[in-house]
Image 1 (tube, helix red, strand yellow):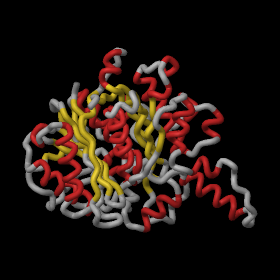
Image 2 (cartoon, one colour; image 1 turned 90 degrees about the vertical axis):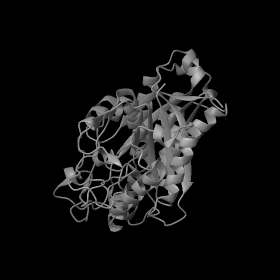
Image 3 (cartoon, helix red, strand yellow; image 1 turned 135 degrees about the horizontal axis):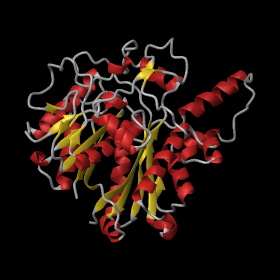
Image 4 (cartoon, helix red, strand yellow; image 1 turned 135 degrees about the vertical axis):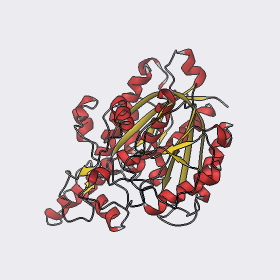
Length: 412
């Protein structure tokens, strides 16, 4: 099997519109949650979200790309452009069939769907849909437009596994490179879910925080008084490359991707298994593929979204998997970014990689009273970053439908 390394990173998210800003705000414990400005949320139970600030798509996209794409695709193009630039790849000199795009999205073009249906209703039910309605809406258009923008003609597709989905994109890209099916992949995920329908749907499920008057501390994984997640938006992009190919061209290498796995809970539509059986198995399989013992892992970026049930279920899985390893530290960056749904796994994988490069673990902020139901022996990075030698890091991403996905990175 061929080895796979990370040679480029890019992001746009509520914590920053590039990797450096994202990393600095993460280690400084910045909360990006605030009142929703995209629409009038005053009648909703949840009125807060983690919105991207000062987003200018024209930095990387031309006018036609902006006109013909939903916001989730714009975020994808923006972060992929950063990552490709960061990688130093000279695309024009490469075989385009050697470079693939596997990009994941949880919901797709919600903003497009809402606006087109509203226009239809306002038009007294006269069919006045835009010819771009379907192309902007469908979830595979981000991967398609990345390939078109850069002329990438290798493997290209999108499948959906809810909030586990960008981890599974990384996993698929990893496996195709290992099998020799491609040399390079642009991979990751994006989401633009801060719309009335999306916020309204999750709010009606009572899955989201209603700390509307205290938005900055609303996302509080592991805290006794957490009451749900805070919605986020954005994208994360990684360039994965076959190791020998990257080494030959003198690429900057951030880390090696050494393990990736996926399991299913087969338990409930929206709730994880309370004992974390499926999540634990995913972590075990990823460690086995990476040829690591549980005691070898230094840092785990948890999926933990700040829901009462989900956080404990995941920590039960961690306890089962690592059995009180004194070397392992865990944290949840969703306390700062909110939950980016289909993009969550990608930007959290980026933080896991950066923790290896910088030997710093970003904190879980807003913990005032630690939940007494947390299993003993788990070392949570609370409120302040921890400086620690990080040689190996794992990132979890789980999704509605019982999807569990895990990726493991190692220094190189």
